[in-house]
Amino acid sequence: MFRLLRRTARHATVPQMPKKRRIPVIMATQHPDNARNPFWQSTGFVSAAEELEEAVVCFRDLSAEEVMWDFEGKYADEAVVDKLFSKHYAYFRKHLLGKEKFLTFRLPNVWKEKGYSLIRTLMVILTSEDIAHDLKFKARPLFEVILPMTERPEQLMYIQKSFQKLAHFKSKIFTHRSDSNTDHVEIIPLIEGVEDQLQIATLLTRYVALHKRFFHRNPTSLRPFLGLSDPALLNGLIPRVLACKVALSEIHRFGKTYKLSMYPIVGGGALVFRGGLSPTRARKFVSEYRGARTVTVQSAFRYDYPMPQVKKAILYLRGAVPKSRVQQVSKKDLRSLHAIIDLFSRVYRATVIGLLEEMRPLFAAVPKRRERREQAGRFAYHRYMGKHPLPRAIDFSAAWYSIGIPPEFIGLGRSLEALKESEMQILKKYYIHFEKDLTEAGRYLNRSNVEQLAKSNPFWRLILKDVELAEKILGVHFGPKTKTELLHSRLTSRLLRHRNNTKEAQRLIEETGKLRRSLG
Image 1 (cartoon, rainbow, N blue to C red):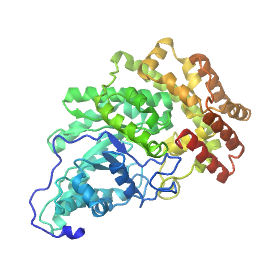
Image 2 (image 1 turned 90 degrees about the vertical axis):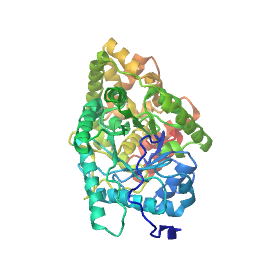
Image 3 (image 1 turned 180 degrees about the vertical axis):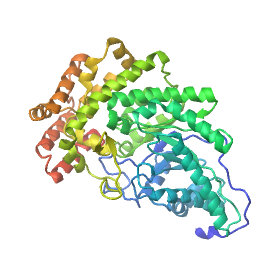
Image 4 (image 1 turned 30 degrees about the vertical axis):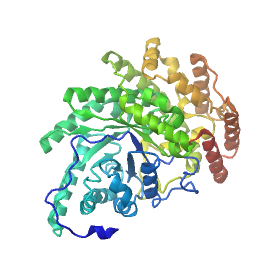
């Protein structure tokens, strides 16, 4: 097929991104939270080489419009576009990459991780444009990237300026081509900290000013990406929900003020703690995170549920997400929301720090589902809580759920008890499914495990107090209700007994994950 790449008459211009582009609703990601094997293979472990076919499956079989191609902490295939066009030429001739289907690179954050992959990823964007041009595909296949852990607008500008310089350098040095590359790349800031989400309007304001100063125009549109997973890991359930609500409100308010089209992305996993977007929870998610324009369907969403259910949920999301109207946060309530977030965060973090070392053997036992760089050695990078390195959010969530202590409950009861009545009303106003979510998570609580652990460590006693206070305040009783949940509880008791046996712990984490339809 690549005979089609013969040098033909060239045009001086290259395809540009249309001013009114299609905004994808469904972004399939490579987050390794699935407990079961993907329906298209049998091992459960997806190698870097297999991710190419996975992308095609997501586009073709699941109707995802966008696939995140992740270079952060991973060994990603840099020849992805070459291979997609070579192996699936007919499909991408009909469904143009960059116009109907979108492949969006998640870059390494060079301020957090060694930046060896950055220049490679940017060069792939340029060479992929060359390939599309030679194939006479009338769309630039790659034109947008995600910067994880964005904290400052200068980071976004650094990527864009670097890309522009690289595009000019390539055209200057490699003179065998008569056409030139587009020298601009759109950038998606992925905001993964609670404080950063609360201050998103400041970041966007400064970014637009810097963009206009350098490029002499405003961005065409913006797609701020609000992560749910890492804010939960770093601050707990309640702060991550409320911070996202504030951010969604601020994004839409910013768009109106600056007359910019805003298309926020909200990314979360299947379990409540990491976001609560699963095929069975699609309607709840849309009503909770109104104003999102793109949502992520991670591995557990796609592989731990029956295929008809997955397809039905994706069809619903594609229709409902673009129509949802944001829940505006009033300036009157904003101060109270900040106070609530601060309270829950402080109690959660103090408790987690006290239990991190005891939980590390379970974090390490979570089954690996993707080919990733190890979180040790020369290439390591971590999220931190103070000076304490943290596991990845999926491993953290999986470990807690698998011993029957959903992380939603860490610090919960004590924080609820400390709330004023007015603050409780504001919490419920902005966290719409607050009680339903906690009731759902509470079905995976193994009370006897908490009581047993509480005998040896005062921090476990605090979590037992959290459970008891939450039950009293909310008027509910947490625990398993169905046969599946009772079986889950029995397996969590077994895991507690074998938590220092890595092989058995790994098996039990996988088995409990299958029952709750997500590792973590």
